[in-house]
Image 1 (tube, helix red, strand yellow):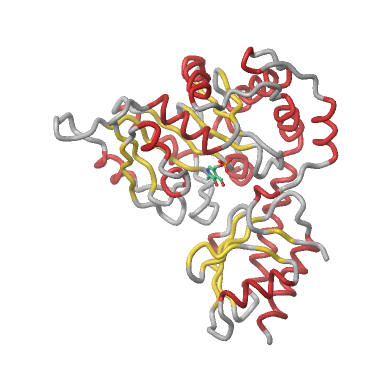
Image 2 (cartoon, protein in one colour):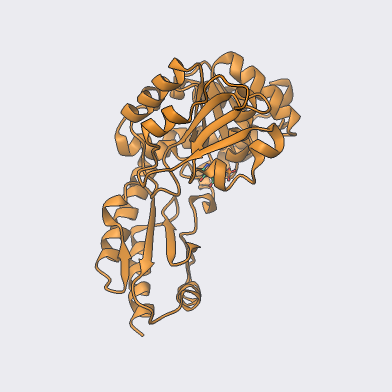
Length: 345
Ligand SMILES: Cc1ncc(COP(=O)(O)O)c(C=O)c1O
């Protein structure tokens, strides 16, 4: 029986093309900046993002942490969403490692933060307050239905940041899901942003790795900070060579993932015992609920698991499904039929 793993797009296994690229990669020591594939990946990433430079890091969590540590002094404050990955799921790293005070504001279901809330959260110059140094957005927004965040909104926040001499960072773990959905080039989407982190290991289906992009000066400091955190890697071309393959193929795969998520949403919408905020499904992440009490969540999950369909209950009666490389249209049909079977008992 095939396992249909809809827990996350981090579970993707590499394609044969990626495996071949990894095994044939010419390697060097990347701490000496001598790995040809890492150098190429970083220059291609900078080009795609429209920034001066880029840096390969082991994970999205480290990419965000390094960005915050470079932008913020100890004891200063970063404004971010209350549902942002950095605030909720990164083990409090910005405060543990950087002494950065987080000022979390309400995220809307669309992954944004109200503009007036942001303006009002910026601290006045007063000895009682921490100094505000950074605003951070997430795009697409994982916990907010995988919503893509528009260029108009990002530009508005960037203007506020600039007027207040703050930096603007984007956690773009899934930013290519946003560019595909919004039909915009990455460099255009983030042209007024200071730094972005994006992941190779999610929709791009690579085994490891994330990339930070920004000015050359920012990346120089980020490289030093990566070393501080023990993230300097040696023959990292085995990671970068996979990323280079992904850059070629990503848009097609991500479009398929979005189509599959939409097909899943259409099907769930037709199942009486399930409810879904159908209009909120925009990219590869969808959330749904059980309508009736006829089955407990433990039983629901375990019966679905036993039939080979894996997914998470992220909070009570809130289930998340994520489509990705390796999930086919047939898998979606199987998943929908399995929901019907399990719920019709
Ligand atoms: C929005 C977002 N940011 C950052 C991360 C962290 O990435 P990593 O798991 O590579 O540390 C994730 C991981 O799921 C994520 O969803």
